Picture 1 (cartoon, one colour):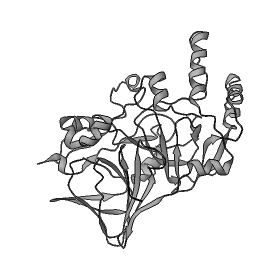
Picture 2 (cartoon, one colour):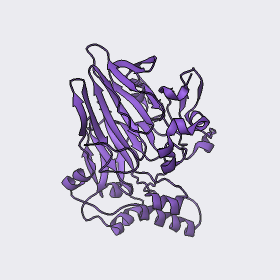
Picture 3 (cartoon, rainbow, N blue to C red):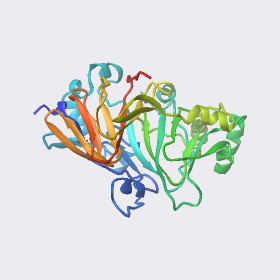
Length: 363
């Protein structure tokens, strides 16, 4: 069997991090679900969590897959056996033998800490990483049992300066630092682009798909608690220097970072929309494919990572077919054959299709 000619099933996981996790369970059809401190699923990932060694698992964060012959292994292991067929020559020239993208499901029971992420150049200089951390959010659902409607903190308000933000940092006043940012109510289907340097925090009750550069570097808003005074000052300067102080009023902030979908193709079969991609970032892209009958998947010339968002259907590729339902996760190797998505009668199936750098669409 030619393993790279067919889609691979990805093994669902949940990663230990902070409060949350119930909505991932419910998305996968597990009720009532549990807020078990595992609020993230790292889908199609060859990225390790920043504290993987401390957790006792050097591959924490890396996804496993089930190959068409039934073999179960880490995705990076399957790719490593034939990176040319798994990733393709064009991708390997751009990014090497890594996936080049990280896709997550993220369920925040409580507000996450105010933070930002570095550009690639800042990450290289200060963290020794080839990847920065531009990211994006696509809101899948909202909790109803939270004290206030779900929101995100995103972007500095107009006129906020580094000196003002630093004053809150020096005082250890996280609330004052958060007050420097816009509070944006969210709705299901909203898409946000979080450029490197943008202050942000996901609020309680938000369940999102997150597509980003393959990095786990986070720059928070809290002081270093140990070390010498020189080390604490260096830490502060690295932290404050990572934030981008280009604030805007509320309307301009939304214009910059809340992104409207753009139709790639449509017909009686349904529609495919570009959610985030060209126009926002060169480092990743993703589309939403909605099918009410049958439609071929577009060939991008690259591998793809997929999450079934809703509905039921069948995936056909060559002489094989796979039953699909909400919550399923898939990896499409570069060498994968032609794939058709077919909805069950009376259903519409929606799939999030996530790409590494290099994929562009005709709009």
